[in-house]
Image (tube, rainbow, N blue to C red; front, side):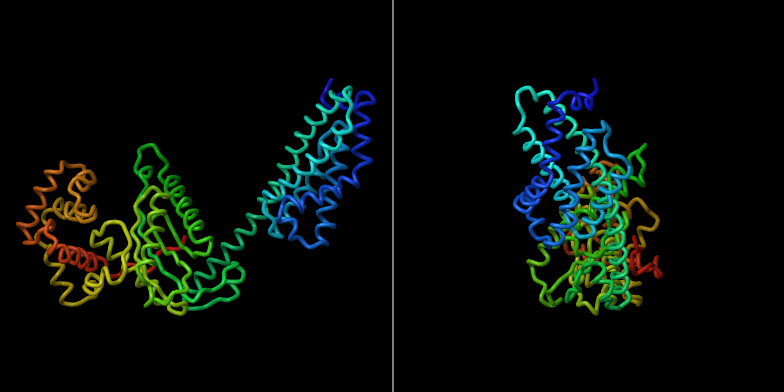
Length: 424
């Protein structure tokens, strides 16, 4: 005999169904009361909504389950569509998904406990079967509710993402778009800390047999998730797997940024690197709201300079790269500094070694691993570089000149490079 037939057989099963039918109004009121008591979000709903839409769905759920007990059939397409539609409305109203699902389980528990309390020993088989059917009913309900909620959230997230992109575009164009900010659900702050990122590949992006595009997009997704957690969703960003822009809301005047602000930003970079599984280099420039359009290209160029001058991953400000920034401008000084490395033109391996050594923060073993050579080979090449250029990469006094020379060479080789990152 099927599960449904078990509950339909005999007077015991029928008595349990009739008790549930006769108690529907009382159970509706009890469930409403418990929802407000146990789930705080329901206490904040308007009384009209609680006694209207919510109460109607409670009563409909009780009636649907009774009908399933009578007919031997679970919810049909029309009933499931009503549950999906209700969940969609709750999502539009901002109710958390966990509160909606919890409400159905709370109501089911109360109804079952009420029926079981009236059962006699001979009703045990019917009670057991009713419990099994209730679990199956909740499976159908949860699936329908989740589908409706997620569908609406995808629409909402899409609209919010579009509004945020409009807001970011306006700021990059020097406009303050209050309407886009309202649509994005973000108040316009007094200013932003602009971060221009250069993101290294994840190890999977170089692994044979791995879909490199999928690996890159997984890295990007993890970075975005960590950024949203850090900024509570208030950051604006335009990121690709290789880098891009982040705008962090700030109420601090640019001239008032101190060690605590920069330490906090370095912690963000650490979290991003850990989440993405890849090193991150970031150039940071604070700006007032009206100065974002002017300062974003500065941040982007600083990131380019830090990368070109073989700086290791980390956070860089204008004061950290002032020499390289100034020398990257066209002029006789740039040409002179760029020529300091001309003796290495005939030895590409030496230039690669110098770049790797500087980028790995003067760590000979790390540079050797990146170049796939022995550490002694790196040491030998560094000595050759010193002999050819007169500059010693192991000597602190020569490091600023070497960084500047790499910057100037790159600036000469790419005079028309883009000053802003591509949109994601």
